[in-house]
Image (cartoon, rainbow, N blue to C red):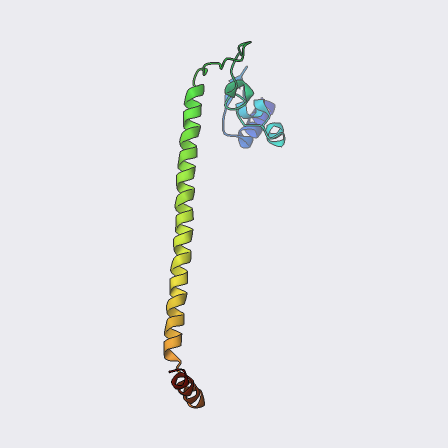
Amino acid sequence: MAFVEKITSLIRARTGVYSIVKGIHTTCVIQIDQKWRRENRLPKNPNKFGALTNLPDYSFVDGKPVPFGIRQYQRIQKQREYLEKIQKLTSEVDYAVLRHAKMQEKIMENRQKIISSKFKPKGQQLINESTSQSDQN
């Protein structure tokens, strides 16, 4: 009895999902062997994504397209919605980046304008500029 309790407590410590098989608590996560699936880059749930769910069940000899299977059309529509949302959000981010760059450029132009208006030539430099302008006229 203590051995069974020890096993069940170890299983509970490992995951939080429980199922009862012949009186011993086990988990469906352990039954699928998630570590192996993660190492082989497979989805957690094998029925959610893959060739069996995404590809048609049969094909015609003449190459005619097969109608969509059960819920396959809904999955395709959901993927299209995700695509549209991703495109919209990336375009908004691109717009924000361009707008920020333009605003920074305007700030730098204003700074340069202020700096150039504050510093005016004095002394010999002012005399040289005034004589060169009078020579041109």
